[in-house]
Image (spheres, rainbow, N blue to C red):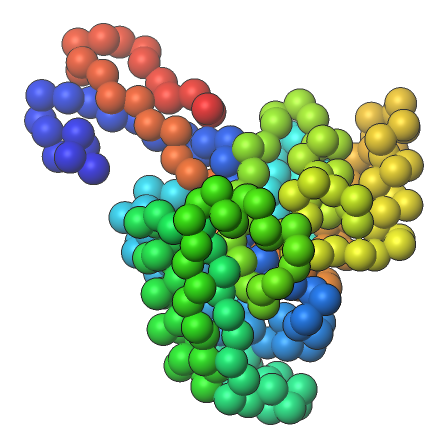
Length: 239
């Protein structure tokens, strides 16, 4: 942002590769409550609080042109009244959840904003920061309610990212997704040679993930380029 305000420099920005989530521990939080909490979160405000508005808010961790990209999914636009209604229907009013995260300035800002937004719908959030290495060593134990995940997406390879994050055996399954149908689809896509069929499979997976509200999708980080304005044709590239 300082570079953007410097008249002697030019800047360009594009969607970066890293996508970030708020992850619900689906072993602990029901689908109905996950959906309710999803309506309570204003992702644009989170982007401003954490990234000073530079991130690219998205509904799935893919961009147009990647296998599985689709807009035909369940989305949860910010609607605190609906969140309260669904929480009441689920008998979850006044609940308290832990937000377990590796200590960093960005994660602390995310946690504080999450705490504030959920408080507005009657839900309490207790922040549970730990040293980053401790988070990596222990998140797999599932001893948390909500956490924060991020993943370096690969432009030409939906398989490795989705398998890691959403297969029950995945190494970065922060949302604790244990869904036999999703497992079967990801296993099928992993060996499918036809790109159109793989695309259909990943679209189906995205539809299931969003309907179940296993996570709140936040944003892609920005890939920024700062350059001398005398340089013609300079553009940021995804990194």
